[in-house]
Each structure stands twice: as structure tokens, then as C-alpha cells.
Image (cartoon, rainbow over all chains, first blue to last red; front, side, top):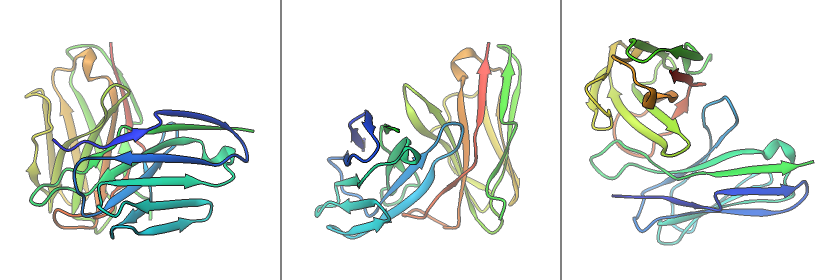
Length: 112
Length: 116
């Protein structure tokens, strides 16, 4: 069974601080997605990484896919209260299946 | 584009009652997913449709759960009879992709179901 473990599970930081969220697995994924979910809403796709070692930037967010395509990280620079939410990573379905493998989630709170 | 539309947004029902959740995917998307989210188990895939046909329903927890997609613009998830352990947030998502792979999913706002 493929699993995606995220760490930390919970994170509470002050506005302006930097943080990194990790998404780890023992399985290889063809691609990996990061979503952010705000209270009362569905997850919203932030980015898809496809190539091992790939780095993508979205304003203050930097996403990296591990060289072996088994792990990923999300780094936020100068966090703002608007970054508060649940961050989920999702591995692309294994060949022949349709189930995205969602991570356990990291709940981030940025205090003003 | 209106995005994925789900109704109702909140549902409170008594144990044993039938519950029907509704979803309208994004126009032109040919893949539809039903998920359930709880604090304990996170986001779980219940069923996946491609071109209105159920492809993988291995995530449907029990025979009490059923899902249909009579046309490209509408899907339902029904629970009959409902039980307190079914309490969760149910999400519908659609994707433009036609098969397995890393196609992006667009989630609806969810239906928060409470079974008392």
C-alpha cells in the first residue's frame, strides 16, 4: 500500500517566519501535486511537479520534487496569515489505477 | 467557469435515513471523483467515474453507499441507511483527464454530513 507521510502535522508560526513542510513516501510517483485547503472549502491545486529534482516557485512558495521522485517539500518564505490552511500532497495514481494517494496533511496557522 | 458545484452544503439527518449528495462537475471534464474527508482518516477516494462510467468503486465502504452518474453534468452519492460513522465532509472533484495519471483535480466546496 502506498502511503504519503507529511510532517509536521501541525505548525503554528508568527507572520514573517519561514517554514518547510515535507511529504515522504517509500514509493515512486510519476508526479506529485500540492493542494491548500481552507476551512469550509475543498482543496485547491497549487502546483504539480513531474521531474525528479524539479523546483517550482509560486510567489513565496517553493516546491521541490525529490531526485528519486519519492518525496517532496514545500517551503514558504515570510509566511502571512493568508497562508493559513491545510496543505496536502498527492501522488499520481500508480500505473493502471486511478487513486491519487493523498498525504496525511499539514495544518498551518500563521499568526499576525 | 462556476467550478464544481455540490449540494447541499450541509446535511443533518437521523440514523437510518437516506441521504443523497449531488455534484455538478466542470463542463468538459470527463473524470469525476467522490471523496470523504475525516480528521482520523484524511481524504479517501470513494469512487471514480470516467465518461459517466464507474471505473473504480473499491473505496466505497459498504453496500449502503451507491453512486451514479446519469450524464456528464450530474452525479449523486447516496447513503441508505445512514449511520453516525458516516459523518464526514464529502467532496466531489472533476478532472479534464481521461485516464490514470497526474491530471489535476478540481474540488467542489464539499457537503458536511452529520448523522445523529
